[in-house]
Length: 134
Image 1 (cartoon, rainbow, N blue to C red):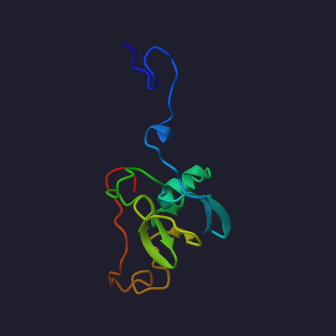
Image 2: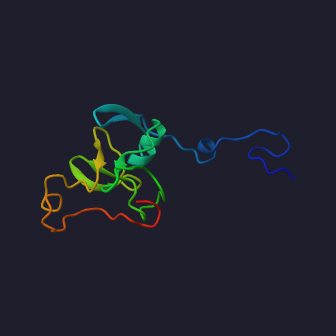
C-alpha cells in the first residue's frame, strides 16, 4: 500500500491546498521598519516576516542581541515587536492585517517611560530571561 497522497497506484501527489480545498485570499501588504512586505490572510506577523526572509526583529535590553521566533506558540516572549504603536506584541500570535505597521523592538519597547529612565516602575515590559539567552 502506498503512503503517498492522491489516487492509489497512480504515484501522484496531491497538494495540501488541494486536499483541504483551500483558497487563500489575495496577498496584501504591511510595513516592517518602513519597508513594504507582502502577507497572506491568516498569517501571523512572524510568519509574514519569515516568508520575506526576516528572521530577527527584536534586540534584548541588556546586550542588544538579536531575537526572532523561538517557540512559535506565545510562551517564550522572544518574538516581541511593536505593532501599530503597541510594544511587546508577540509576533507569533498577532495576525498581520492590511496596512499593519510593525517595528523592531529595542529592549523592553518602553523607551522614554519611567522604567527606562531608571525610576524602577514597571510598565508593560515583556518577559526576558526564559532560560535560552533572552
